[in-house]
Length: 316
Image 1 (cartoon, one colour):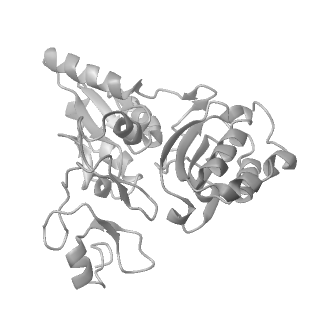
Image 2 (cartoon, one colour):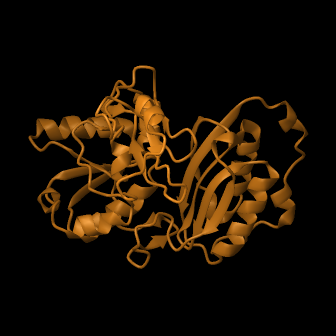
């Protein structure tokens, strides 16, 4: 493993006196695939580092690398990112920024998991210092538009393939996208193995997800199952929204996994979701009323008020 986990002196960092005057807050979304020999040591370091700067959010560490979303005062988040990059395997860490704060997360959670994203295929994915092996061709938002134009001119239109859980696609997706029938990320394996998407194996397929991390693994799994021309949107929907907002190929709102629930790229965002109760238009995602359940669904404001004890289809 390149480098050693930084010692305690670098966990503590500089004085926080400058943070008292910080009024702007941000959320940082990031991941880095790199082999880690001691994920538990990295977990302890990351927890101490984020705690020192007063950040909250979720950080996953695995033998394959790191995946996190943290929020707090802008200077604090920048200090956290800067220090994280001092660790050799994370030197190339790229960050997507969005508006928000530590209040958007209930607490700080830093855990070690077998995978950065729970596809239940840890032994199928090979990660080197160059990242995930067999992954799809990375496309910038501009590259994506060029590819769509080129393929349409050649008579082989691009197929957009949603790499998120199906409920996320209810409120926002690329126009005409294929949305697999998935409740959790683990469902992708059975979906791909079912043969229902075999007709796409000879077509240009562009996968996309929130920040890009799920597609790093998904495209490798697709390649292993015979999909020949597979691409992925580099930086995910977040980067695409930064580049084109609501004037491109994206439609609707972006689901996020914190107290914001969703974000929009402009005040022109379309409402494409339908309320699960009344079928009216909505972009609102809400949790099941059972506190032990984390199942989301689209529920409009009126129905949320009228049926406060609504339970999801899983609980019913």
